[in-house]
Length: 92
Image 1 (cartoon, rainbow, N blue to C red):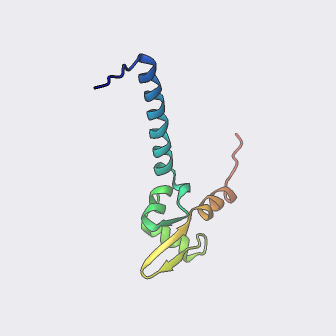
Image 2 (image 1 turned 135 degrees about the horizontal axis):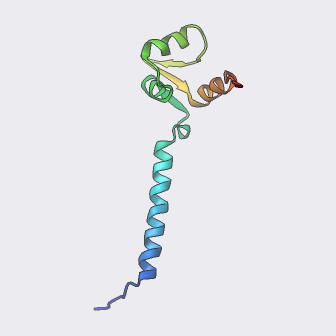
């Protein structure tokens, strides 16, 4: 039976690689920009708004959407564009 000695350097390298992989997973799953389309509840969470406010944004044409069956989808990049286009610079 062969034995391998694990050094402190090996453990440090393993830790570094593991941390980097975990960071990649968290960035991918936590970053909504990875998803092209969001459902209503995801948009509400993203913007911190109620379902009524989201409905108002749809009705008045502020936020474009697609409807498939009974599910509404919103394009992530459209949401970002709307936020950027409506940014107000306040100077004090």
